[in-house]
Image 1 (cartoon, rainbow, N blue to C red):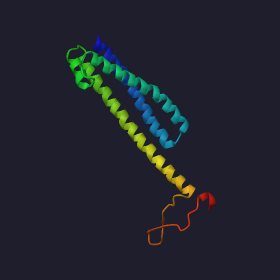
Image 2: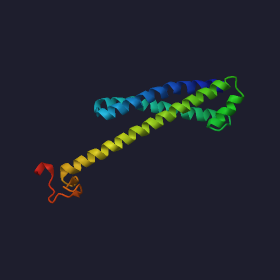
Image 3: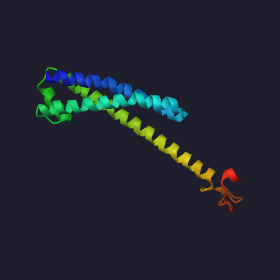
Image 4: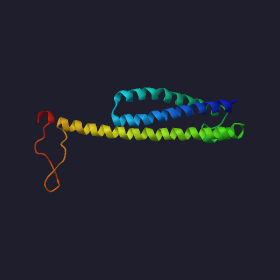
Length: 155
């Protein structure tokens, strides 16, 4: 009975993780396009999926712990050894783990894009405010500093 419950949770989470991965990939595209309306929609769609994955993860852990097994792959493997659904439990557990790792990798990629975009925006704002002067090249190809710094709004 516990093995069936666990398998159902894993199967549900596989579908949820697939949908989350799609949203994270959509988020990457929208970040590149800087479409804030669609980005807000995607973020709103991601939140319940993340909450559901967290809730099911806790349920899976509690289920394994209630059977006095560790709440990791070793615990799942121990349960699989004494279950008729053992092979399917392990296969689906591995599939879920792979999907969650892909979600994490894609999310890190999106984070790098966001940080890069923030740095670029901060640099542009610094130039506009006059606090940061862009490097200009002189006739020898060396960087030359501009003598008088003024914000572009005062130029």
